[in-house]
Amino acid sequence: MECCLLTVCAVSAALLFVLFYWLVPAVQRNAMWALLWHDFITERLHDTLTRSTRPQRMLKAVQKKATKGDPESVISAIDYFCKHSEWAMNVGDEKGSILDSVVTEVNPSTVLELGTYCGYSTVRIARLLSPGTKFITLEFNPANVTIARQIIAYAGLQDKVTVVEGSSGDLIPQMKERFGITTFDFIFLDHWKDRYLPDIKLFEECGLLRKGSVLLADNVICPGAPEYLEYVRNSPRYESRYYPAHLEYTKVEDGLEKSVFLE
Ligand SMILES: C[S@@+](CC[C@H](N)C(=O)[O-])C[C@H]1O[C@@H](n2cnc3c(N)ncnc32)[C@H](O)[C@@H]1O
Image 1 (cartoon, protein in one colour):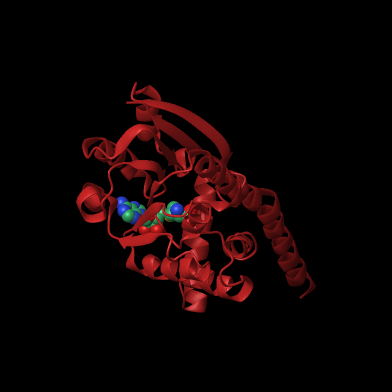
Image 2 (cartoon, helix red, strand yellow):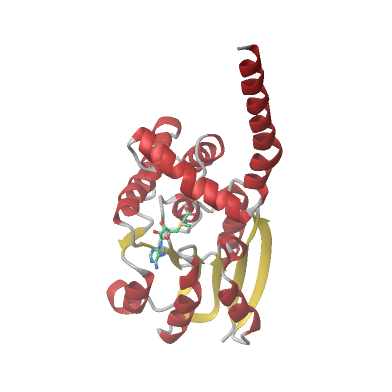
């Protein structure tokens, strides 16, 4: 009996050691482990245990902690939820402040966001726009669109942004006719990374960029968009600059690429 108890204690101690000295730091600092852990294992576990989805839980956190009509409190409530309850694929607070400074510097009249998810970055951008700015955000997952619309409305920003359901590949060519856009002053790319390159080429083909249009791409290191980076850094049509940071709510290296269209 005593021997059995000792074995249980030894195995538990070994497991704790592995957890704290190897698994936790690995999840914090390693890109593959971080995404596998946060975006796959824990999300499915929470979904099963709570019979809800992560976007639904994020909306609940906003309704519980934020003040209606106050975008800053909505941003803080989501950041708090993601740091203390569950990681989520928002641009996050660290890269979010880089996003804020680029939006403020560009002071755009026309804005496009690719990848709304739950509306975190949409709220960040919309709160900084001058009155009369046209802001469109695209999201192809209908469940995310439903949550994003509620979070944006909770922040009181529903009149500043149009959330459009559909895929970027289908909607970009419709921007001029359907939405009356001539060119975009600012574009935030934060959808699936394999779409960055085809979509920037689509902007060019559709004549949606003007001299000085600014494109800001998230997650260019983690999960990574190497073909997009190679394109914007080597094309004479763009002047590109990297902003180093970390994958949202972790210590994993990531960053934003700002590219100015020169033609
Ligand atoms: C990283 S999340 C966006 C996070 C959001 N920008 C934020 O910071 O709060 C990516 C989102 O893009 C959406 N998405 C991926 N590919 C897309 C596409 N081609 N067209 C429209 N939405 C897309 C996904 O469904 C997902 O919700």
